[in-house]
Each structure stands twice: as C-alpha cells, then as structure tokens.
Image 1 (cartoon, rainbow, N blue to C red):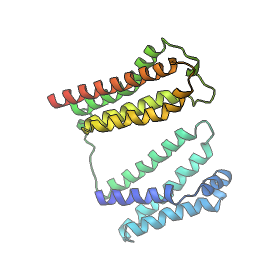
Image 2: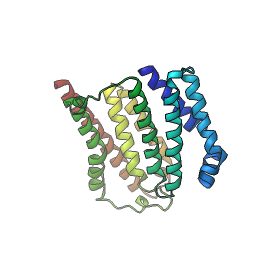
Image 3: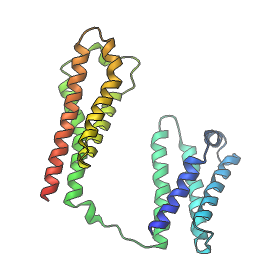
Image 4: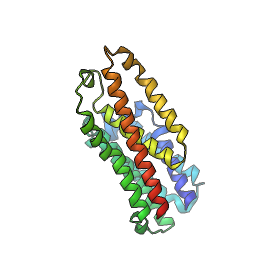
Length: 238
C-alpha cells in the first residue's frame, strides 16, 4: 500500500508542480477547457501514472479515474477562481486531488482510519501546544507590545500582518527544535533573525525601535521555549 501511495503522490507532484509551466496555467485560466494545455496537463498525469504503475492493466480504470477527476477538479477551480479566493481554492484543489488518491488506494488496499489516534492524549496534547504557541501566543504578544506605539510599527512598505506570521513561524520552528533536542538550532534562528533586522535597527533614529524589537524577540522566543519545555515534560509523564 505504501508503495502505491508514494507512486501516486510522485505522479501528482510531477504533473501539478514540476511539469506544469506558468504559461500553461495562464493559458488554462484564459481559455479553460478550450486550451490545448488543459489536455496536455491531463496527458502528463496520465503518462506518469502509467509509467510509475508499470502499465499494469488492473490499474487502468483507476488511472482513468485519477486523470479524469483531476481535470474536472481543475476546471471547477478555474471557473471559480478570482483574485480574492485563489489561495483558498488552491488549497481546496490540492485537498481534493489527495482525497481522490486516498480513494484509489482504498479501492486497491481497503484500510480503516483509526480515530482513536486522533483523540489520544498524545495527539490532543500536541494540538494544544501548537494552538498555544501560534494563536494564543500571538494574542499575548499583541496585548503586551500594544503598550508601545512606535511610528515604525506601521510603515507603508510593510507586508500586512507580516510580523504576526513571522512570529508564528519562528515559534513553530522553536517547538520543532525542542522536540528534536536541537537547542543549538534555536540560537542559530535567533542569530538569523537578528541579522535580518540589523538594517532596521541601524536606521532607527533612537534606541526605541531596538528596544522594541529586542523585547518582542525575547518575548516570542521565551513563550515558545516555555511552551515547548512544558509540552515535552507533560508528554514524558503520559
């Protein structure tokens, strides 16, 4: 079963990402099913599925199912896509493709989903740690840092919510490093962030921005390390 899953995923990645030029994507957006590249895209998937599944006749109906459903899903996505929803549709598009792969695998190798694992104490504890280190920590950071309202906090050339997402990502990295016992990597992450912020700090008119950045960085990493250590301690007690 694992071999089949890997083959189907490789075929999907080759067809949807590696061998789908941007020009094909734009052409499909402009002409939908009338574009020749819409069908070229399907042929690429078909060829890779045939090659990876070694032209085995028993797989032919499943290959047709995957290829046909892939084109139908892509067509629906193209029809519904706008500038506002394209990111959501991209995620839904990929989830539907993966769902079809899961169905095909189930047809060949019937399996059961163990929901007990999802509701296990280990899984629930990890979910709590991730939620705390992302959403909860972001609110804590925002509440504490709102005490200082620097003019530099709202530059016109800053990406929307960039600071929030950077904080979430860095805390997730810290949690991962703690779980892997790679404490040195946390120091490397702090150093890397300091290097990237060096330009902002050297351009500051006074030391307020420097102090603001240092407080935010230490608070973010402090929360991540505390939550990571607490999670690891509780996980060992289960």
